[in-house]
Image (cartoon, rainbow, N blue to C red; front, top):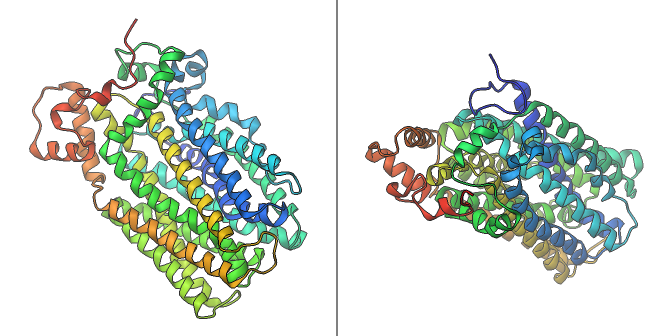
Length: 512
């Protein structure tokens, strides 16, 4: 008989298509909001709100830094929420998703034109904190609901497909609204904010209703020997516990690939709309068309990447994706230098190459992320999905804020003038350099890291078999091949695994 309700032992409850769909749809918030923000918030602030480029970048940076500080705290709290009555009733992860639903319209409030710097700072900070409150628990649910490699890969795939679908809306949305409201109407962005706020609330409700977690008894078994942490003990152990995740080799390499693929897109996104408007002599409507088309190609690329990563492994697929994105950027800049401008059909060539690479780069890191808690389990004997999600978000937000602040600061130093209809040749050249050097430099970094990343379907299967062996008989002998694989993935000697190392003791409290 199928197990129903908020909890089910991992692997015992079948994952139906609607469970996959509900999980994936939540990335309308995760990626959809970021697509809207990364594509449009800087130009909205500088064109319709009277802010200078450095002020827009400062808002972005302050919000992301505060979010980065809060994210590990949320991850730690969600790991320990099972000790509370609310966590036992609604789930230690799902409780946060339920609580966030009535607060999500704050996203629409970000897009009201004509307000002060402080208004935009406060609304953006509030949304970023709310975003973390939802996304960090959400990112753990694939590991909670599925055990085997393919199930987790399907969760990652459907998530990124929904992400790309929402990005298509974010790309084409301004163009459709401009046709209705006019090129110079700030309400374009307000209506887009209202649309996405409604989508966020619907998808959050679906996820809460159609997801589940490990039962409290299973989590307790993995954390046997630990007592319920006091507030003081939890705060003291928090950052030691979270940053101990960086002592897991596969996770360090995963972070390198993740940051290489995503920061390259951050730099590209921050500069691209400005580049289209000022370097290619286009408009917001043209930029919307190009971004929307790129996101459509990304959607197709995700479907290709799902099969490609399973067949040839995530690391090699990552390198192919990075090469495609880099080709797109190089061709775009070569065309601009040769005199190609807005409206030329040749512009669709670099857009297609960039979209193919970006779609796969979006999928692959999240596909591999779902297995990081498995590698950690063989090291610590515990499940710390929330800690990994917290560190992922912490590092991502800090580096993303640095990337965007860097782009806006360089734009200002290069002579960019907010609100101007045209920019100087020096400012345009600066935009081109940022777009090219920043994007391709981060792609090269990610590719270098990928050559060391060895987690794939085969090695993950060996890892899971070894975890099962440790659970049944920790002292039983293992094969040399298995030993080599788990040592490479974990970064620890085999005799130190399964709790026999300092990482396993970090963040633990003694029983009363």
